[in-house]
Image 1 (cartoon, one colour):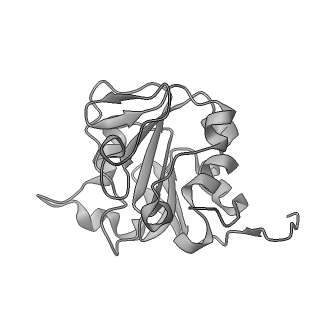
Image 2 (image 1 turned 135 degrees about the vertical axis):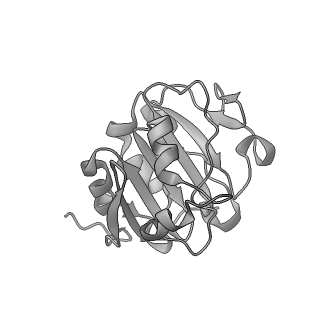
Length: 181
């Protein structure tokens, strides 16, 4: 691990599985989604990003969409990601990006209909299965139905969900740097 003044690496919190997907969490004050996207840029390059939560709302209702983005159903969707887009990743300003969530797809499902996990305040991914009740949220079913490559969100904790466990382990490599709002 290299040492850079003013930069600190994240300390892995909890890890686990939901269905065939792996996940990892770190306390939200250790990093933000922009840092995670930059760290995972090689893995995310060429994928399309779908915003599932923007400060608990919809990106298109609370912010201007970046050039080239479009709306599919109720979600803002990026064109295939390039490095320059990931270097300047959009993030809601309220709460420094808390309650933002992104799904990344190789090919977009025809029907997205995605619900955010990040808005279930006080819930860690360790307790995701407890939300699978009528009127609740079945994260496992949503992941299986839509098959994202990666999910990045920030609610109670900052998290990464992916079918490939190595994507979750990249969370350890995130370098947190304070950002301007």
